[in-house]
Image (tube, rainbow, N blue to C red):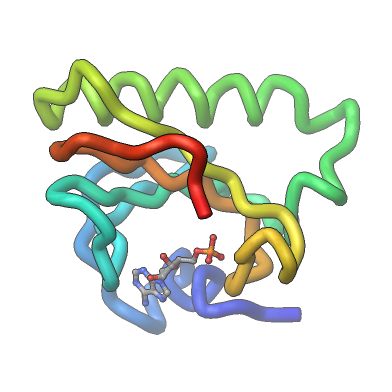
Length: 111
Ligand code: AMP
């Protein structure tokens, strides 16, 4: 099923882009939970971590490496990555995404 993030990838819906390459796209979260709140998503349609396959291994590593580059380029030394998987875990958009959150003190454990 086409999600809002597919529409962002195709350009149907605008986004505040931070980074883009042939495998992924990163943009600012529309409802930021911290001074820096960026989402990095694969261009490939993968609904969640529940659907990842062995063939996605390199892509998943790429997303994490880009997350680090993006966080560092935003001047973050301390930052959090979040991947919500499934409705009860808080996933609302069923296109795999990594939240990059930072710029304030982050509490643990999360709610
Ligand atoms: P999750 O709850 O983990 O599925 O995260 C989905 C995130 O997508 C939320 O933090 C939303 O604020 C964010 N979001 C939804 N629509 C957009 C959009 N059009 N542009 C940017 N971020 C969005």
